[in-house]
Length: 201
Image 1 (spheres, helix red, strand yellow):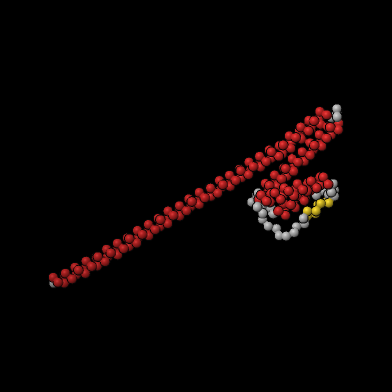
Image 2: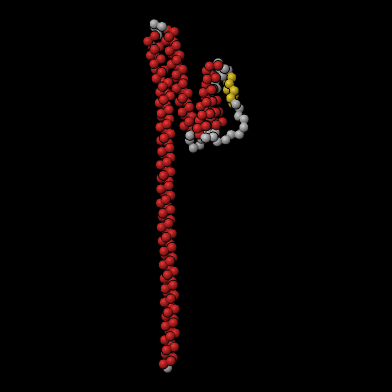
């Protein structure tokens, strides 16, 4: 009977040890699972936080670029349009002063003033064109030039526009330079040549 009791005790202890081992293994598995889950949640939260910071930085960079562009245009407007209007104002003062004493001088001053006003208008159109061309849905060069053609065309001067080659996206500075050069050429051709027809290719 004592041998039987010893065997039963051994079996019981073995079963108990096996049960304890299973419990320990399950506990370790559960701990690992929870730890992995926590690490995953922490990583996910860090990623969300990083994405929020990236969006904030992108918005700040965009705002900074917009402010810098506005400041550049403000300086350009001040330097060009402000200069043109100042000279026009001086010429009009001359015209006013010489109106009765020397009408030819007064008339010449009026003509010069008008030229400066027209110069200022061209600069305004160019600046507006740059604002349009710097937007996210920037027009292609041929679309921008088509707008110039429509602005210059009058019943007294017909302007034809022909495109050769393939339309493509250009660097903003190149686009702006070509736009302003074409605008100036068209305006000068119309103003100084007395042309009744202009062809832009």
